[in-house]
View (cartoon, rainbow, N blue to C red):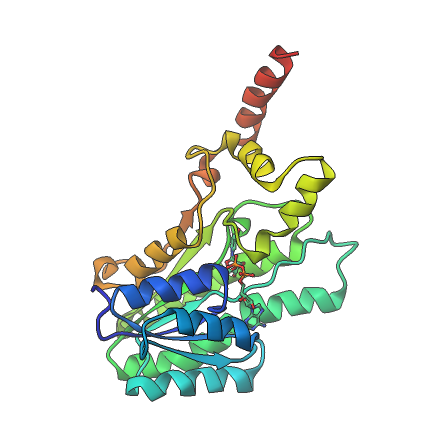
Length: 272
Ligand code: NAD
Protein backbone atom coordinates (compact mmCIF):
# COMPACT_ATOMS: atom_id res chain seq x y z
CA UNK A 1 0.00 0.00 0.00
CA UNK A 2 2.73 2.45 -0.98
CA UNK A 3 0.25 5.15 -2.05
CA UNK A 4 -1.98 4.91 1.02
CA UNK A 5 -3.55 8.27 1.88
CA UNK A 6 -2.50 9.86 -1.43
CA UNK A 7 -4.85 11.61 -3.85
CA UNK A 8 -4.11 11.43 -7.58
CA UNK A 9 -5.49 13.24 -10.60
CA UNK A 10 -5.12 11.19 -13.80
CA UNK A 11 -5.98 12.64 -17.21
CA UNK A 12 -7.02 10.32 -20.03
CA UNK A 13 -8.12 7.88 -17.32
CA UNK A 14 -11.08 6.46 -19.22
CA UNK A 15 -9.06 4.09 -21.37
CA UNK A 16 -5.72 2.47 -22.12
CA UNK A 17 -2.71 3.47 -20.05
CA UNK A 18 -4.64 6.04 -17.95
CA UNK A 19 -7.24 3.46 -16.89
CA UNK A 20 -4.45 1.01 -16.00
CA UNK A 21 -2.76 3.73 -13.91
CA UNK A 22 -6.04 4.38 -12.04
CA UNK A 23 -6.45 0.66 -11.31
CA UNK A 24 -2.86 0.32 -10.09
CA UNK A 25 -2.95 3.47 -7.92
CA UNK A 26 -6.14 2.31 -6.21
CA UNK A 27 -4.62 -1.15 -5.64
CA UNK A 28 -1.66 0.65 -4.04
CA UNK A 29 -3.96 2.57 -1.66
CA UNK A 30 -4.56 5.92 -3.41
CA UNK A 31 -7.83 7.67 -4.18
CA UNK A 32 -8.07 8.84 -7.76
CA UNK A 33 -9.92 11.30 -9.96
CA UNK A 34 -9.98 10.26 -13.58
CA UNK A 35 -10.69 12.71 -16.34
CA UNK A 36 -11.37 12.47 -20.04
CA UNK A 37 -13.85 13.54 -22.65
CA UNK A 38 -16.07 10.46 -22.75
CA UNK A 39 -18.50 10.11 -19.84
CA UNK A 40 -19.34 6.40 -20.39
CA UNK A 41 -15.68 5.39 -20.54
CA UNK A 42 -14.98 7.19 -17.28
CA UNK A 43 -18.08 5.68 -15.68
CA UNK A 44 -16.95 2.19 -16.68
CA UNK A 45 -13.53 2.63 -15.07
CA UNK A 46 -14.97 4.14 -11.86
CA UNK A 47 -17.48 1.26 -11.58
CA UNK A 48 -14.69 -1.28 -12.00
CA UNK A 49 -12.88 0.10 -8.92
CA UNK A 50 -13.82 -0.42 -5.26
CA UNK A 51 -16.55 1.95 -4.12
CA UNK A 52 -15.28 5.25 -2.69
CA UNK A 53 -11.85 5.03 -4.32
CA UNK A 54 -12.47 6.89 -7.58
CA UNK A 55 -14.30 9.92 -8.91
CA UNK A 56 -14.73 11.00 -12.52
CA UNK A 57 -14.67 14.46 -14.02
CA UNK A 58 -15.54 14.80 -17.67
CA UNK A 59 -13.46 17.42 -19.44
CA UNK A 60 -11.05 18.40 -22.16
CA UNK A 61 -7.44 18.98 -21.06
CA UNK A 62 -6.99 21.66 -23.70
CA UNK A 63 -9.69 23.88 -22.14
CA UNK A 64 -8.72 26.03 -19.15
CA UNK A 65 -12.21 25.96 -17.61
CA UNK A 66 -12.30 22.13 -17.76
CA UNK A 67 -8.84 21.91 -16.19
CA UNK A 68 -10.05 24.12 -13.32
CA UNK A 69 -13.03 21.78 -12.83
CA UNK A 70 -10.72 18.71 -12.78
CA UNK A 71 -8.64 20.28 -10.01
CA UNK A 72 -11.75 21.36 -8.04
CA UNK A 73 -13.13 17.81 -8.22
CA UNK A 74 -9.84 16.38 -6.95
CA UNK A 75 -9.79 18.81 -4.03
CA UNK A 76 -13.20 17.52 -2.88
CA UNK A 77 -11.57 14.27 -1.71
CA UNK A 78 -9.46 15.73 1.12
CA UNK A 79 -8.52 19.25 0.13
CA UNK A 80 -5.21 18.41 -1.54
CA UNK A 81 -3.49 16.85 -4.56
CA UNK A 82 -0.43 14.62 -4.10
CA UNK A 83 0.00 13.10 -7.56
CA UNK A 84 -0.71 14.30 -11.10
CA UNK A 85 -0.46 11.97 -14.08
CA UNK A 86 -0.78 13.69 -17.45
CA UNK A 87 -1.77 10.80 -19.68
CA UNK A 88 -4.32 12.24 -22.13
CA UNK A 89 -2.78 12.40 -25.57
CA UNK A 90 -3.43 12.70 -29.27
CA UNK A 91 -1.48 11.17 -32.11
CA UNK A 92 -1.96 12.51 -35.64
CA UNK A 93 0.19 10.59 -38.07
CA UNK A 94 0.59 12.92 -41.02
CA UNK A 95 3.71 14.39 -42.59
CA UNK A 96 4.37 18.13 -42.62
CA UNK A 97 2.92 18.50 -46.10
CA UNK A 98 -0.24 16.59 -45.14
CA UNK A 99 -1.07 17.76 -41.64
CA UNK A 100 -3.29 20.84 -41.37
CA UNK A 101 -2.35 23.77 -39.15
CA UNK A 102 -5.48 23.00 -37.12
CA UNK A 103 -4.34 19.40 -36.52
CA UNK A 104 -0.87 20.66 -35.57
CA UNK A 105 -2.36 23.10 -33.04
CA UNK A 106 -4.78 20.51 -31.69
CA UNK A 107 -1.95 18.04 -31.07
CA UNK A 108 0.03 20.65 -29.15
CA UNK A 109 -3.10 21.80 -27.29
CA UNK A 110 -3.68 18.28 -25.93
CA UNK A 111 -0.11 16.95 -25.58
CA UNK A 112 1.57 20.11 -24.30
CA UNK A 113 -0.88 22.89 -23.31
CA UNK A 114 -2.97 20.36 -21.34
CA UNK A 115 -0.07 19.16 -19.13
CA UNK A 116 1.11 22.80 -18.82
CA UNK A 117 -2.30 23.98 -17.54
CA UNK A 118 -2.70 20.98 -15.24
CA UNK A 119 0.73 21.49 -13.72
CA UNK A 120 0.08 25.22 -13.37
CA UNK A 121 -3.20 24.50 -11.57
CA UNK A 122 -2.01 21.65 -9.32
CA UNK A 123 1.48 22.78 -8.24
CA UNK A 124 0.19 25.47 -5.80
CA UNK A 125 -1.92 22.79 -4.06
CA UNK A 126 1.04 20.41 -3.94
CA UNK A 127 3.20 23.16 -2.40
CA UNK A 128 0.49 23.77 0.21
CA UNK A 129 0.46 20.05 0.99
CA UNK A 130 4.26 19.88 1.41
CA UNK A 131 5.15 18.39 -1.98
CA UNK A 132 3.98 16.11 -4.74
CA UNK A 133 4.82 13.90 -7.68
CA UNK A 134 4.04 14.72 -11.31
CA UNK A 135 4.33 12.05 -13.95
CA UNK A 136 4.05 13.05 -17.59
CA UNK A 137 3.31 10.31 -20.08
CA UNK A 138 5.34 11.20 -23.12
CA UNK A 139 6.43 8.73 -25.79
CA UNK A 140 9.42 7.04 -27.31
CA UNK A 141 8.48 9.31 -30.22
CA UNK A 142 10.00 12.15 -28.18
CA UNK A 143 13.39 10.43 -28.29
CA UNK A 144 13.32 8.62 -31.63
CA UNK A 145 11.60 9.81 -34.77
CA UNK A 146 8.59 8.04 -36.22
CA UNK A 147 7.82 8.59 -39.87
CA UNK A 148 4.92 10.97 -40.56
CA UNK A 149 4.60 12.18 -36.98
CA UNK A 150 5.94 15.75 -36.85
CA UNK A 151 3.27 17.08 -34.47
CA UNK A 152 3.27 14.04 -32.20
CA UNK A 153 7.10 13.81 -31.94
CA UNK A 154 7.56 17.57 -31.47
CA UNK A 155 4.80 17.94 -28.88
CA UNK A 156 6.07 14.98 -26.83
CA UNK A 157 9.69 16.21 -27.05
CA UNK A 158 8.49 19.60 -25.79
CA UNK A 159 6.69 17.83 -22.94
CA UNK A 160 9.98 16.19 -21.91
CA UNK A 161 11.68 19.59 -21.82
CA UNK A 162 8.80 21.20 -19.91
CA UNK A 163 8.90 18.38 -17.35
CA UNK A 164 12.58 18.91 -16.62
CA UNK A 165 11.89 22.64 -16.27
CA UNK A 166 9.26 21.89 -13.62
CA UNK A 167 11.70 19.53 -11.88
CA UNK A 168 14.27 22.32 -11.64
CA UNK A 169 11.89 25.09 -10.63
CA UNK A 170 9.85 23.21 -8.02
CA UNK A 171 12.36 20.71 -6.61
CA UNK A 172 13.05 23.06 -3.69
CA UNK A 173 9.35 22.82 -2.78
CA UNK A 174 9.54 19.01 -2.81
CA UNK A 175 7.72 18.61 -6.10
CA UNK A 176 9.19 15.93 -8.31
CA UNK A 177 8.43 15.76 -12.01
CA UNK A 178 9.38 12.74 -14.10
CA UNK A 179 8.58 11.46 -17.57
CA UNK A 180 7.71 8.02 -18.87
CA UNK A 181 8.25 7.31 -22.55
CA UNK A 182 6.24 4.22 -23.45
CA UNK A 183 7.12 2.23 -26.52
CA UNK A 184 4.31 0.36 -28.26
CA UNK A 185 1.40 -0.42 -25.90
CA UNK A 186 -1.72 -2.06 -27.26
CA UNK A 187 -4.54 0.48 -26.67
CA UNK A 188 -7.11 2.45 -28.65
CA UNK A 189 -4.26 4.68 -29.80
CA UNK A 190 -2.54 1.81 -31.60
CA UNK A 191 -5.67 0.51 -33.34
CA UNK A 192 -4.29 1.91 -36.60
CA UNK A 193 -1.95 -1.08 -36.65
CA UNK A 194 -4.95 -3.33 -37.37
CA UNK A 195 -5.44 -1.48 -40.65
CA UNK A 196 -1.77 -1.86 -41.54
CA UNK A 197 -1.91 -5.59 -40.74
CA UNK A 198 -4.98 -5.93 -42.95
CA UNK A 199 -3.27 -4.08 -45.77
CA UNK A 200 -0.40 -6.57 -45.79
CA UNK A 201 -2.83 -9.51 -45.52
CA UNK A 202 -2.25 -10.63 -41.94
CA UNK A 203 -3.81 -10.36 -38.49
CA UNK A 204 -2.79 -7.84 -35.84
CA UNK A 205 -1.01 -10.34 -33.56
CA UNK A 206 1.16 -11.72 -36.38
CA UNK A 207 1.94 -8.21 -37.55
CA UNK A 208 2.99 -7.09 -34.05
CA UNK A 209 5.02 -10.27 -33.42
CA UNK A 210 6.91 -9.49 -36.60
CA UNK A 211 7.64 -5.91 -35.51
CA UNK A 212 8.96 -7.18 -32.17
CA UNK A 213 11.53 -9.53 -33.72
CA UNK A 214 14.12 -6.76 -33.32
CA UNK A 215 13.11 -5.60 -29.83
CA UNK A 216 15.18 -6.99 -26.91
CA UNK A 217 12.21 -8.28 -24.87
CA UNK A 218 10.51 -9.49 -28.07
CA UNK A 219 6.88 -8.82 -27.09
CA UNK A 220 4.54 -5.86 -26.53
CA UNK A 221 2.98 -5.19 -23.14
CA UNK A 222 -0.23 -3.68 -21.83
CA UNK A 223 -0.83 -0.47 -19.90
CA UNK A 224 -0.23 -2.26 -16.59
CA UNK A 225 3.54 -2.24 -17.22
CA UNK A 226 3.44 1.54 -17.64
CA UNK A 227 1.18 1.81 -14.57
CA UNK A 228 3.63 -0.04 -12.33
CA UNK A 229 6.40 2.44 -13.20
CA UNK A 230 3.94 5.31 -12.58
CA UNK A 231 3.22 3.88 -9.15
CA UNK A 232 6.96 3.72 -8.39
CA UNK A 233 7.40 7.35 -9.51
CA UNK A 234 4.38 8.45 -7.48
CA UNK A 235 5.65 6.75 -4.32
CA UNK A 236 8.40 7.40 -1.80
CA UNK A 237 10.37 4.56 -3.40
CA UNK A 238 11.51 7.13 -5.98
CA UNK A 239 11.87 10.00 -3.47
CA UNK A 240 15.30 11.05 -4.79
CA UNK A 241 14.37 10.97 -8.49
CA UNK A 242 13.28 14.03 -10.41
CA UNK A 243 13.68 15.28 -13.96
CA UNK A 244 14.29 11.83 -15.38
CA UNK A 245 12.97 10.50 -18.67
CA UNK A 246 12.32 6.78 -18.46
CA UNK A 247 11.65 4.69 -21.55
CA UNK A 248 9.35 1.76 -20.75
CA UNK A 249 9.56 -0.05 -24.04
CA UNK A 250 10.99 -3.56 -23.75
CA UNK A 251 14.35 -2.11 -24.77
CA UNK A 252 13.16 -0.59 -28.06
CA UNK A 253 15.17 2.61 -27.51
CA UNK A 254 18.54 0.85 -27.39
CA UNK A 255 18.19 -0.89 -30.73
CA UNK A 256 20.29 0.51 -33.51
CA UNK A 257 18.12 0.46 -36.63
CA UNK A 258 21.10 -0.15 -38.92
CA UNK A 259 22.27 -3.14 -36.86
CA UNK A 260 18.72 -4.49 -36.69
CA UNK A 261 18.47 -4.03 -40.45
CA UNK A 262 21.60 -6.16 -40.94
CA UNK A 263 20.19 -8.99 -38.78
CA UNK A 264 16.89 -8.85 -40.63
CA UNK A 265 18.55 -8.76 -44.05
CA UNK A 266 20.69 -11.81 -43.16
CA UNK A 267 17.66 -13.76 -41.86
CA UNK A 268 15.37 -12.85 -44.74
CA UNK A 269 17.86 -13.09 -47.60
CA UNK A 270 19.49 -16.34 -46.42
CA UNK A 271 16.10 -18.09 -46.25
CA UNK A 272 15.42 -17.39 -49.96
P1 NAD B 1 -5.86 5.91 -25.42
O1 NAD B 1 -6.38 6.44 -26.70
O2 NAD B 1 -6.52 4.72 -24.82
O3 NAD B 1 -5.80 7.04 -24.31
C1 NAD B 1 -5.74 8.40 -24.56
C2 NAD B 1 -6.76 9.03 -23.66
O4 NAD B 1 -6.65 10.44 -23.74
C3 NAD B 1 -8.19 8.65 -24.08
O5 NAD B 1 -8.90 8.24 -22.93
C4 NAD B 1 -8.73 9.93 -24.65
O6 NAD B 1 -10.11 10.06 -24.50
C5 NAD B 1 -7.96 10.95 -23.81
N1 NAD B 1 -7.95 12.25 -24.44
C6 NAD B 1 -7.58 12.55 -25.71
N2 NAD B 1 -7.74 13.85 -25.92
C7 NAD B 1 -8.20 14.39 -24.77
C8 NAD B 1 -8.55 15.69 -24.36
N3 NAD B 1 -8.50 16.73 -25.19
N4 NAD B 1 -8.98 15.88 -23.09
C9 NAD B 1 -9.08 14.85 -22.25
N5 NAD B 1 -8.77 13.59 -22.57
C10 NAD B 1 -8.33 13.37 -23.82
O7 NAD B 1 -4.34 5.63 -25.70
P2 NAD B 1 -3.13 5.32 -24.72
O8 NAD B 1 -2.22 4.51 -25.51
O9 NAD B 1 -3.60 4.83 -23.40
O10 NAD B 1 -2.48 6.77 -24.57
C11 NAD B 1 -2.17 7.34 -23.30
C12 NAD B 1 -0.91 8.18 -23.41
O11 NAD B 1 0.20 7.32 -23.71
C13 NAD B 1 -0.94 9.22 -24.53
O12 NAD B 1 -0.41 10.43 -24.05
C14 NAD B 1 -0.04 8.63 -25.60
O13 NAD B 1 0.57 9.62 -26.39
C15 NAD B 1 0.96 7.87 -24.75
N6 NAD B 1 1.63 6.80 -25.49
C16 NAD B 1 0.97 5.70 -25.93
C17 NAD B 1 1.66 4.71 -26.62
C18 NAD B 1 0.98 3.46 -27.12
O14 NAD B 1 1.66 2.68 -27.83
N7 NAD B 1 -0.26 3.19 -26.81
C19 NAD B 1 3.02 4.85 -26.86
C20 NAD B 1 3.67 5.99 -26.41
C21 NAD B 1 2.97 6.96 -25.71
